[in-house]
Image (cartoon, rainbow, N blue to C red; front, side, top):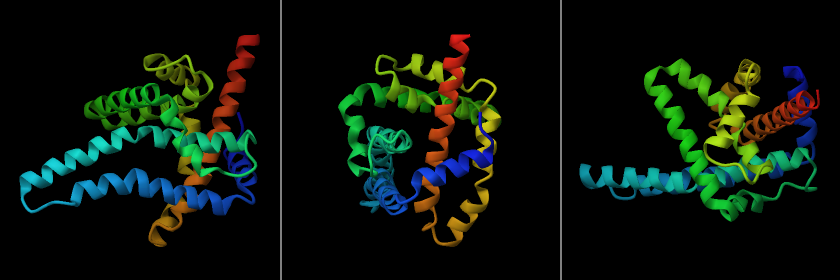
Length: 214
């Protein structure tokens, strides 16, 4: 595994010449994944009962759009693998080609995380990191789904959850700056973080293959 600085340097290198497209992709993703559910959540609020009904509908829409979140994450994995010369926004919609597997696996992952959070915040937080490689696994292993993909993520992250947490923690300064800039900074921080995560997964995968070979 690489050092934190190594992952950040590799992320910058992978995004060189692509920051503009990455920011646009992040904006489009935010408008779709956050904007559409929010629109339905607030469109009618004349009565409390109506508002509650549309809040629930907004949540359902966001769940239905989980494959777009998958596609957004995988777009940066494909970028570091140099599968495409440029970031292609159309890749965000690739998850709809395997909609049921991706949707149900991520829904199950979310339920597990929520249940752990209801018990205690810290165990839930730890589990969220355990499950963090699930989407990459869904990409690389089309036959895996549901618990199998989640369990493989847990196995890959064994002994590495703190490493990924510290990588995320190292970006807190950029997150504060993004808040100060009224969220504009997140258009660049999100691709930066996603790309660093993708490199982290590639190293985990290489480590796994090396352990199997031994």
